[in-house]
Image (cartoon, rainbow, N blue to C red; front, side, top):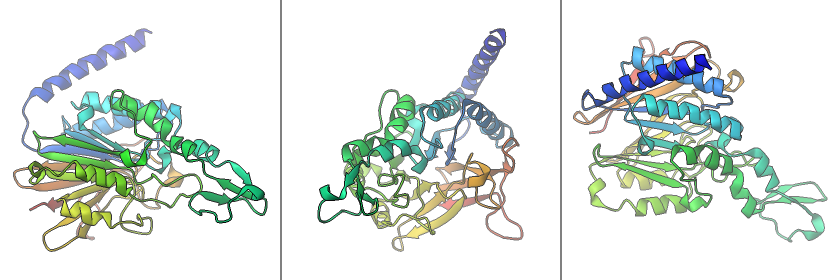
Length: 360
């Protein structure tokens, strides 16, 4: 008990010291920490991950305060209550140490944030004689000649329940994640920074059987954009966040929604899922387009990492005067090792550990 008490006293003193740093005006730049595919399982992992990350941000990148934390899905590994308890330890620690609050945290679910057990229970077996003449392939799983597993939508929505009640609700102080797909979006607007985040669920059609049905729910997107009609947002930096990529073999199938975001002058989208940091650009016309920033995996088990790609995270620095975003990519070669610069951009013979996006 004495050790715990001493540790608690030490952390309180560190929090006070951090608070003094937060109150000191640094510069006009805005720092956005982008984590993805954390795949947390235990609280011991959460403490270790936070310590390693905090050390890198403060000692190596000289970041004393963060303006935003973005987590683009796969917070847990199997969407269990224990994993989300650990995830909250990580997020709450970062919020406290870097001067954040719930209004500066952006979280979306990933495919590992829906519970497979609950998903399976939502497909009860129906014998062949009770099946309709025409089966909806989107709602059924064949079970041979004897019948099929038919989705019960009232149970199906609950596969996000653990994510909602054990994590999301704690981060956002009592606000649960909507089970209605059309309401699965969140808008965070910060007038003092002239920045807006739109969080969307690209996993709303995914389950234990249909694992490739990534996409954006157009009802949710329409409702979100309807709330952003005000012209006051025209000169704001608008960032959209979801889990799945819009390029490559694992991309979402309905990428047409990028046109709507481009027309509404969104300039950045952030995602994860593929366990590799990427940068690309979706061009809508000669004046508009979206810069795509993909974060690698922050903590996936070695068997789930892309061959030759280390653990990664991104730190974005927005210079509002220059209208640029610098994306620093960090890497960790060993799970218990330290983070370092991940030089992989631009010149292949002399790569840089960062790239710069000019927003014009």
